[in-house]
Length: 111
Image (cartoon, rainbow, N blue to C red; front, side, top):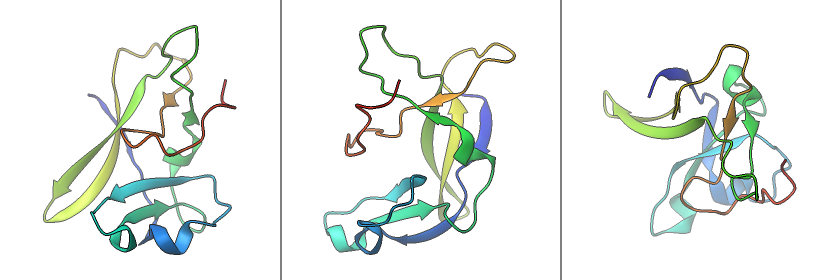
């Protein structure tokens, strides 16, 4: 659970971004009303977190993931933090499963 980075960017409604061609979005908040779901978009503003590689964790080789996303309430605001989910060796590439628990992001083409 070592902190790596906050997934930073502009917050928008998922509904308004559903046809967006951006490849760097993260779910911030899901509700029962799909029109109120929020995502963080790094197409205009972002940080180092957009360079963490997406990984398909359903490969025959097993899970390569070494970074996971956690959501925290900090001073009444939701934040998505990227943290280590196991020991990471110096120089090792960072891999995150962008599907989280919703499994909506197509990762079948990831290595």
